[in-house]
Length: 145
Length: 251
Image (cartoon, rainbow over all chains, first blue to last red; front, top):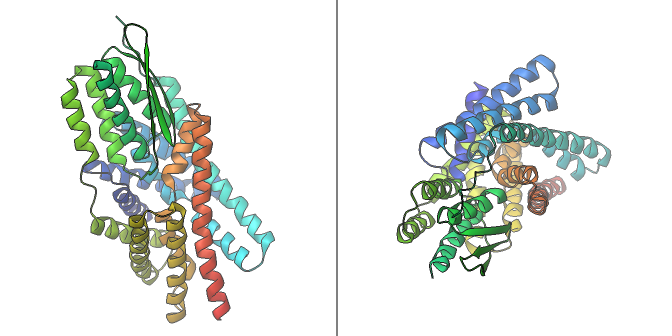
């Protein structure tokens, strides 16, 4: 059920990013897969940032695969895909603590937010790096005359 | 003559990609790919705010062009289309007129119209609020707030003011409307509404590109994009923070 919501969310963001046609649906699935993996891992381990990391890795895997199948840049799928994983609640609570003059709690929430954001970045980075070293995305140069 | 034409085409392709928010390595690669398909040696150097291209002609003279990029927006399908065009050029080497026409077509392609984007924002806010365990009422309010703040933001975008101001306004409007809604209907959960509607304004493109640029060794661009993302998020949260402060004082 929640994964379906993640699908709708990613689908809607891809619309605002001007993605078109059937790629919209694939971008939506990226959000679905990321969030599904995230919630399964979170359910098993109870560790939020670890779950985000695995979720982002799943988004990365899906995006790089979809990019090769559909002949499109991987970012078309990964950008909408990571949005459901963003630690929005922690970020919001940080602002609330700051506004309420509770800087110590705010720093705690800031750490949590940065951890989540870092986990997303690292997950995507991991997959791109692996894919790049395996397939070699730098195009071969045509032989010169 | 031929290399001047080619230069124009390569520059145009790079410009469209960079304006649409492509990664640096992709822009550089596309420019080199286009030039080398026509057997012209080429070096390109791209920054988030400008493009340098240098072509080497048969006599060994170099021909350099530079273009400053000022405004950027997110248009992933534009990146996609230029990317596949450059691959087609590599395969079949069409003549310059065909390529130029196609580039123009991509540049002037229909964007999703404002109502479509508006309803997408509303729908997205709705879905994300539900995702963060908001109730159905929270989500419906978030849908309305998402639409209103997106329209407010669109007004500023049209005025082409300081781009960070758009996000400040989006955060401010979302925060104010949410606290007002909670004031009217205490059953609502303000923070789920705010979190759900704010997600649509997060700089996902800057963050993702910053990671990718770092991986490809474009350190300048990576840091610039990271800085952009941090600024955008800070401004957005400042907007929400100001709204929360105002509502705290009214109580």
